[in-house]
Image (cartoon, rainbow, N blue to C red; front, side, top):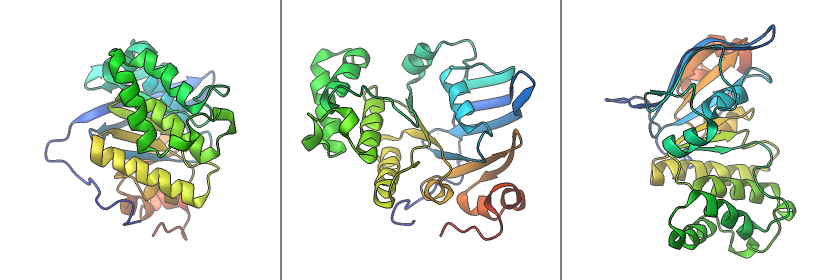
Length: 258
């Protein structure tokens, strides 16, 4: 773990929340999903969300991006209440990038064509398009895959591509939904290193949700556990795994991430 995450942001002298949820509740019909939850993600932080299936982790991403609206409460990005902001404006004005669990690319386009298609939309200076594309291809070591259709890439290669696509717009916030799911051990370690390097080199604020608890805790600064529509624990990885409520609701007594 230490080789992946050499430092952790445990506290801030002058915290600058980039995303804030204030007393947010959401339900689908009679089914309550989130019950009056409040939390903050600070600028430059890697923040993780854990919890059982159906607890609302991906729903929180949908609320941040604007795919859905809460029944009550406030969602703020850079201290702006964004409840009534459309998806495109949240992306453009606040530079929020999103990496979905599945898809996120054009299957029948090559890796290069995928990058070119998105670059033409998000990069205003046309002269910069090619430079940005080549920079990301080099960064993710994708040169030998440029002319391969996305549908023929491996799981790890597809994940690299989708992250590269999300970085074309130079996001300040990057949301990663189940990014470690169904990947082999070496690919997971590669993704962990990419995530930590994005924080270290680009100061991108990153929020991850996943079921792979050990993999997530190995690269986050702060995490929270969701259960029964509530946040039951929040803190550093060590604080979470030693939290009585988190053990009872999610980890169990024998869990260890070291």
